[in-house]
Length: 485
Image (cartoon, rainbow, N blue to C red; front, side):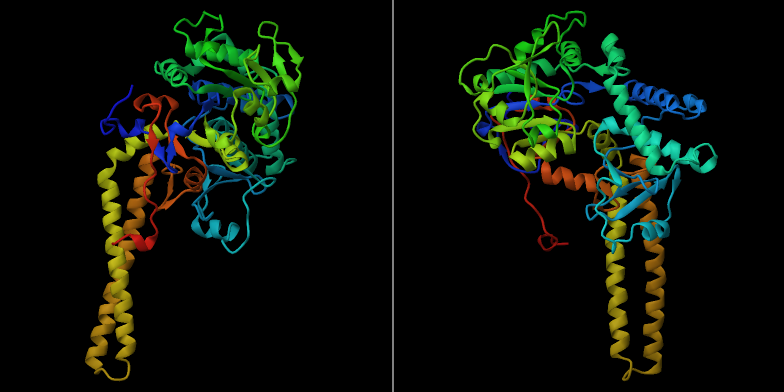
């Protein structure tokens, strides 16, 4: 599809540009698989991960009563930070100021937040004491952590464990679920229960290949699972397991161990497609130009990918993924790939934001009124000081009365603005508010998206609205002094 006009595209299906990207300069387009090529149903997939993790926790000594717990897939959002030591979950703005914090299911007050996370303290909010919720895979883990913190505080059944122990147990249990097949085996048995199908996926992949570009996958999933998932999302008949989907790609790298794939020289193996066995390969063979016998590998690193695809520099690659750290930040920061971040939840949020336009306009109007009153308050305070010695008693009283009146109006207006902003955010998400904002500031997650994602969108198939040689242009950057308000 090559439309001349893009204005009729629904805003939630548009591709947003942080850094100008001319697709004519791109020679290869790569994809992550999970939550990028394959979109999962959170109400089934994340629920599965959650309940399998509960079983693993019971196996290592947790109370069997947790098996009766339920997962709320709408409770968490990505972009949050887990404080493993204090047992809190935080949402912060782009300056790393904590704006929302929960301990278990209890929201911390402003005073409690400031006491724990004073901006004067240098806190990096990184490992080992903090964990980032930067992918949809992490939502079940974060929700379970909140539940266990609440459980520990309200009972004596986890007295022997601190909050960090609990987090590590959850993380270890989830990892085990992925390694032993507890999750992926069930998805493989019934992909349709856990994975969404997008009718535009195959057409857009074909369009990309017909445009003359190399098309590849770099996924942390192993070949057996990758084949099942890709066969399902690319085939109209889910029982058709003939690997025809491989015709859409020039190269498939499984078990890539991202983000290590972008940073270290891991060994690479050729994958035997039917037996799933691995075979050592001569690295010199990969460096030679020309066709390769097999297009499916395991492991490796980005330089080998360059050799196989005939790529000279990272800027010739556009990589599309859902993980801000594992897919986007490292590929951009370490080797200069161009990037597109898939933020699936953005589609629903944009729709809700459109429905809340009147509420947004009200908040904006209240903010402008507050700024005006603050200016008036400061002006009268200066006037009061200037007239301190020269003005009559009556004039001084008038100024003092005016200051008192403005101060009262300002206090009421601040309370109203705070209330309406809170209402606006709660309409988008009752716990954490708007994904990309905290109050009027960009969230920490939004700042990462702006810094590391050249493009971002709600799903990769939104490319169907754009031609293969589209020149994506970034909007003008604004500094506060640029805005004439």
